[in-house]
Amino acid sequence: MRRQSREIALQILFQTEYAPQISYEDLFSIHESQGDRSLIKYADEVVRGVHDHKVLIDEKIQNASRHWKIERMGGVDRNLLRIAVFEMLFSPEHLEPKIAINEAIEVAKVFGSQESPAFVNGILDQIVRNESK
Image (cartoon, rainbow, N blue to C red; front, side):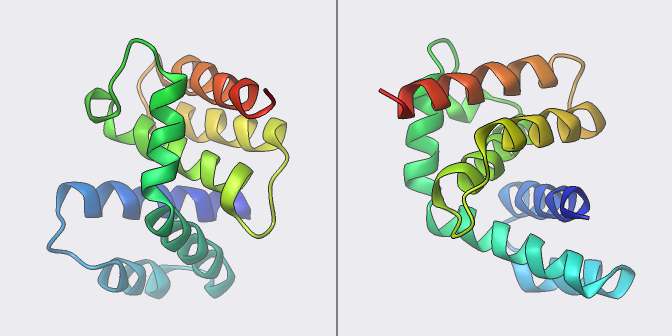
């Protein structure tokens, strides 16, 4: 069930990044009319958490990425990384890194490019190593 919430959160983060005139609330109301309220509740927590901690999240992603500037990353990859970093480091219910990484990889297989799972795995693994220093 949480994976579906992450997928909804990814879609909303992606859409608001490329069409900022659309509000989170409008996008959530569309998803809410199509799905389970509990899915939307967790997706809302993730989207708002990513938004609230975006500067710090992006800093951690950038520090882990030697060859890619965050603004040059694909939109799906960038927002998947943001979701996973939020869940691992900033969520009130910290998610175990192995679980967050695995979930991000699985969602990347559905929404990303062929290279997305490996890219997401590499960046998140480096973030975890950076945090354990």
